[in-house]
Image 1: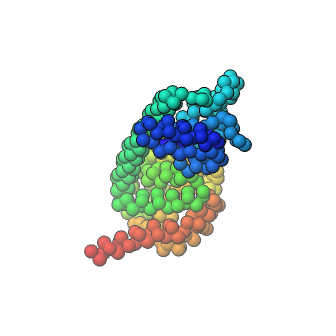
Image 2: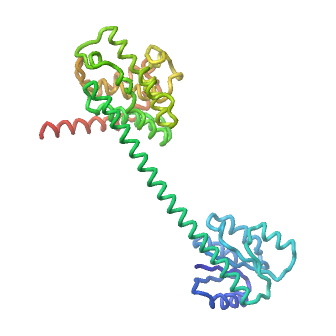
Image 3: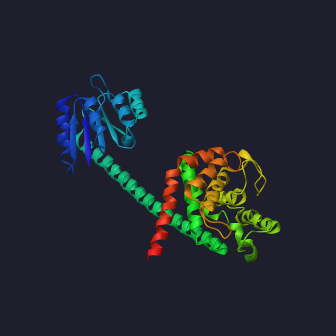
Length: 351
């Protein structure tokens, strides 16, 4: 344990050091200048501080206040040494943060007993702190496991939904990644970006309620079939509504609103502009962009640059201009997302 003694009388310092040296081995440092002592305390955390009341420019109460202002000294035991038996002085010392008092001239055995008791208190504090840190670490580990489990469940569910219309899950992966890039460049919080990243894969949850005959029909859809497809936003909303977690609430928003358009001509709830929830506006850009870049039964995949131009051209029409600006700002990152998929495809072909 570390002990700090602050007293501007060197004789008193030496006596206190000698008394405390008869206890178990401790690291004792002595200071005649309280300013120098405070500088040292800012560098080292002592476990017990003894400070004299009557000193030069800084008295003991001012020194105690300065110590208590340091984050690491809010609970360190402090003994005030004083030759005064004034009640107001003691009350003032208590208010400033002194833990105990010792009158001068002091009894050596009393000093040892008080110091020993306060050091035992400090050891208990440190043990509790260590226990609290350990518990916090264990809670963090358990929480991380829950997060990883939720991520896996969401990923597997979203892939199951995607396989119904012939996809292998790459669409889900790309849409969630592009949405996260857009959110980041909009300056949204890390927590929001992460929640969006986890919720976006569920944007087409409602497709689970669409018949295979319509969902997997080759070629163009009829007007009636298109109307059936459009019901997947309402179906997804019904499946995900009423969730208690922020993740499921956002997934519900995205499932219902990701086909809305900025100019009000989309579908879901027929919203326009800022009335469309932000998560739906962001996902709309990511979803359409990936649809353009993906090969479908009715169209070939668009080149990356051509798809980017189309997104920009739809700013203020299909898409929120702010989302499009963020998309443009993160274009290089988005390019990397699609380059990874190209590299995977090339590796598969060469194998």
